[in-house]
Image (cartoon, rainbow, N blue to C red; front, side, top):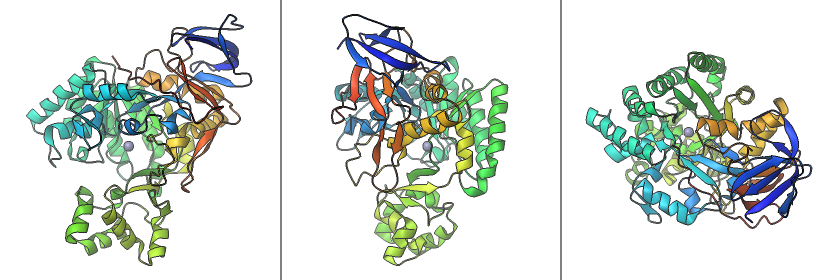
Length: 495
Ligand SMILES: [Zn+2]
């Protein structure tokens, strides 16, 4: 299938606000022609009544490890995602020596070899994560970096950029990123100066101190090349919801002053991350708290007491591995929510939780902004393992984002924010739009039926409405044969 035509579709090119009826000729992995009535001896895919769009780009993903285990990457490909930008929030163990007993590599280059042998269904773009960069130089040392340590991080970062990494990501609320000061972050970001590559950040505080954290993020970006992607933009906890206007004012002032600031957001009001985020100070600084609680009985009562001042609402917090809230678990076990939460922390160091922490009104406001693209913050999954419960954003972000943005803006605008906007942010060349000469990452979908069926109820399901997905000019997914996923994804170096 080197040559084929997609006929009779409503072509939404990812850039313009017009949708026009056209045929698309694909030849050797690229778009060879877009015009009315392309005829010839080609294989034909009929797209009558359907939208033909560029493959969606997941601007914020965490699949760098998971797609080795689940190379079909069903959660993403079945939403129409053809390219993922991985390595966000400071987390990119793929860029460094790694060994988890199943997968092992000594360098980013070796990881890329393994990825190419595994060949997932989706293309990959990788950021260098600050947490792992820091670990490679300082282990988990809970200290401010010394000058020579900063220099070592800069050198390693520079080398990874030369190998095609797309930029720098940070997660200053996680270990060991939270030990870094602004000076360290500015110094590393300065390596970006002679490039157009991006700095992305899960900022130091998305709640009470969000405005200062945003100032810090913008200052770090300014110390780099002035390009900044605000990760999963939100204001956490009801008491901070009113801060959105001040936050947007900061961002838009920075834009007027010449910074290139963009953002991504998933269309959900629950966040999901490690359960350790429920810990108030000083316990939030203890990376090994589960082990301590378990093995030595360390401060169990003290931790339980401290949880009365948790920054999160424990009662409504969903334990994603259990498919229930801490409140429900506490009732089942006939203990207080604090006690149940402490037990969960003790039982599993990797316990994941979803927090009802965001405002539905703010979500609407954020999604209405022209510089906000779709980013799932989700991972690859097969969704066939009850023990592998993932946030519904992993399988539902794109249909849900499409429905929300197309209903308030337009179909073409929703598509633009899922395609050419992220391509432009990450400088992914010749993708994210339907144009002659571009790589043939293409999705055919029914705009009426494209919808998410993913939830927190443990019955996470795939979206409806996606007809066909092509990656690098080859058919990856066809709704007629949903059991088959063809894997044609590649690593996309950013230069
Ligand atoms: Zn994050």
